[in-house]
Image (tube, rainbow, N blue to C red; front, side):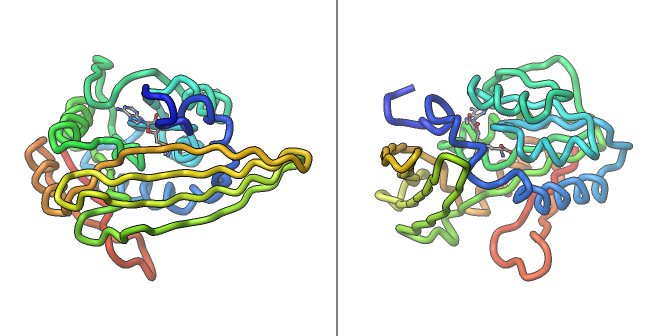
Length: 243
Ligand SMILES: C[S@@+](CC[C@H](N)C(=O)[O-])C[C@H]1O[C@@H](n2cnc3c(N)ncnc32)[C@H](O)[C@@H]1O
């Protein structure tokens, strides 16, 4: 990996537990579990979490399913294992892996944003299909889409520990609207015992239209259902995809 790129999943992975408490993942994880049960045509016991990161979603999903997580980053997998010692975690690239087994459900969360070409997005969906039992459900969703992308959107949040105050600044910018990517830039203000340290990070993320998502999910073989994030939600759907 290039220096200064995807640091949040490498040398700065220690920041991940402070960026959004694990409790913040409860509501969405409960929705994903509910959608899986609602659409499944088989009994669902197992779940494969593709791009499981630090295991915050897995922390809630494991109450419903036996969770196996894969991720491309060893530091993120270490965090996931610490949070979920009873689950299985493996280092794999979601575009090309074969666990030689199938699961009753598959979940591809915000990690799918790192599929930056249509070919890679299709590869991830094909991996999901291959690892899913017939009648099982795959849940995925876009964080951002070309249809609704907000140029230069900046979000700020803060986290405190006994010795640290960390301010997270995230800026999303699309320098070339005609291509299939946007840039996500992070600045971390880390005040430890009053001393300031500033770190920055750069991520390239995929940006496709909803129609491209629909077409690729169908091309991978799924029957595609579009669900809402729930009361008060607007905009992008959650895809519940049946094999
Ligand atoms: C935002 S984090 C996911 C956090 C996760 N939702 C959680 O609950 O902690 C995105 C993850 O996608 C992973 N990722 C990016 N590209 C990947 C790939 N090709 N295969 C597998 N994982 C990938 C990164 O290593 C990172 O851990």
